[in-house]
Length: 397
Image (cartoon, rainbow, N blue to C red):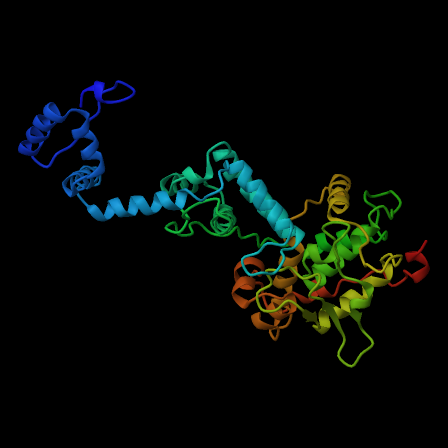
């Protein structure tokens, strides 16, 4: 169309169903001038719409249904919150700290810390990209490039992030829906030898020197309940040590030894939120309770909590302990050791009994914690005791 008919003086295209229809319009335009154009605008014919649909359909291999799908996707994108990947992940972490969970149960601080760490790789990769622009192909490529054993854990957290993003309108559609979980969860089932654990207990309890020829020290006495409950009962670190000052952990009042059925209560307030079978559970295996009772008198009893420190300070203690003794900490080592030696204690402690003690399913215990050892070999682990000559006075010296 000639530019003289438009305010911006620029030519525009007009489509017709046939050449004959175009020639008729040209003749009318020559006679009526702008009036013919105005009339055309007021009364668009269906042929023009059909042409437009056909032109769009050509972009999608002639499939008109794809034109409708593209329109629906455009509508979804019109109501989303614009945000980069970094902005969205920060908002997600704030929501997690405020208690958001797909199951409605507030996550523990340790779970939130794990989410933060797992999202870092994803955030660093797509930091400045608009979240709504991320495609399924880009995410598939991202997961394919992860080669370490944390691949499945990262997938789990990124998937959780996109569930949240869809709920709160940061994306119009979830690109993770078509991506299946790949890789395996990291399996860390290494355990401590009995001799190593014995040395850890004796050094922490101030009964054995760090180095031969030197005097014993109580510099690591606050690690003793961490060793005792982790190694003899399989208690999670986040249940023994507070993740922060506002969190709860095992208290002296959770030990019920003078009752008909002695037990240690793992309360709902301290148990890990992903515990599968139930939140609250009890540790009541006789061999575990006897070992714990033998070592508890050596622990500090100056606070309602059996371990008064937080995770941050305990990390510093562990670093100092390793530097002084040369003993390196194994990830999940105490819990793995408990499950492994409990399973091989006497042949009567089956997988179900061990799983019940630590609050997990049999499948999780078999895969992540326990190693098969000869029957009876677990007795040496649970028979570890402090020296008989140690009195309660030595514990408070």
